[in-house]
Length: 324
Image (cartoon, rainbow, N blue to C red):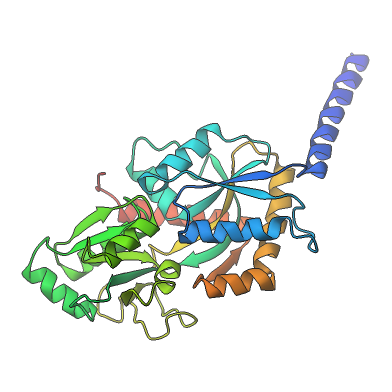
């Protein structure tokens, strides 16, 4: 019995050593990061900042390149379904997350394979509010203009957004309820095509990311922001929807960061959780984020876990009774 005990002790020690050694050597090859949206959008832009810093020759970050793999479709469902079911659990398959997107979708849709229980948050790097936008030649110059027209013409005002039950759609649902107007939502495959639809006049309005709208200010008008306070760094003169008299909170604010599939070795997750915030606190990254109109919001792993749980509670209440 004693020999058997010693044997199993040796085996467990050997396996534990192997796991630590694996984490200690990590990463020894390129890392893949899935972005569930089109190239050029805010999520893609911010994820590519990680690729810029990952193998920086003068920084002790990852020492290996990161490869972005875009898997757009259905407001993120295509990419996240793939990630939740097929990603390797060895630290070499990671994904950018968007909250409230994948939380709300996991609540409403029956065909989602992802939820907060089968994914592991690593770190958060940004918080991007939704903004209400119209084309530069639109007759709407204020929220009041739009609401007045929409009430007189039920269903005629069309809104674009990056899919169903993403942050843009949640902002739309809150806006419609608070304004008392009947509006029409037109989902797109991502923020870029949704923004293009507003610019090109295919829709009359839209909710989009502050960061994407900020970079397109010459082609659109930004009427309001769906947050509890103004964005003083990028859009100090743009009022919140609350300031415009509408009861819209910050449930649609798009938190962005990086995650791993459940089952990834904890040593690797903790390693990444320590490195990612350093990359986004780097002056070069901060400069690029500011240039791109992207608000930085660094959150550690524990803070992200709490945020995920809180969003699930609030969104379950907000979306109760809604169907795809």
